[in-house]
Image 1 (tube, helix red, strand yellow):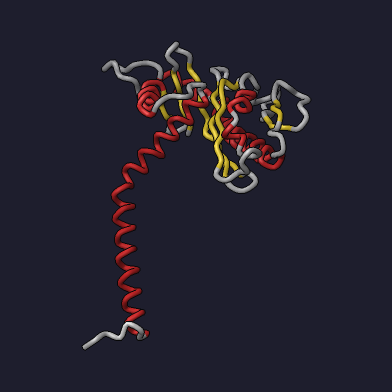
Image 2 (cartoon, one colour; image 1 turned 180 degrees about the vertical axis):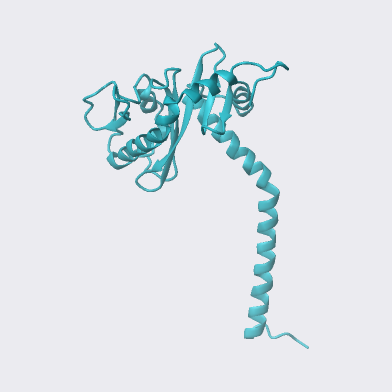
Length: 223
């Protein structure tokens, strides 16, 4: 019996089978690539942490090896304790916020005074190219954060991005033509470091960091 390829039943059955086959293939490809995708996401984050430490322009293998050597993630404090090759210790804080069109994020590295910015790196999901996207694309703008103080004399979060810099110790010029994205960076800095403020002041913080820098009886560093 010849099939009626113009019938509604045929079209429905054909479409259903086609959708099932495509869905299966997509699921198979996604599952097959998941490990590689996860590895790429992890590597990208490692590079962002290194960027905040002014260790940029590394190949994938160089970046991963360097990250494994100098960076330790503190799960309890939700930050990174980094011992540079010259022995200096830096603390890298992850940041999350909202820009004009979507999420923004970043990493700020502080010196061992836990107040002076050593380096900064910012990222975004969908800011305007040439404007808000400059928070990621402009290394020159990110470097303006170096040397700024996060907290004022009263312990308040003072690091911010503004149109007119009046307090150069704490303020950075905003990205030209991207006021709303710049405001988003300020909000992200204010909220993120307000959450970290008590951690930075706590005596327990000092004890934990010092303990992690000393080898145990087996000659290994505490995790």
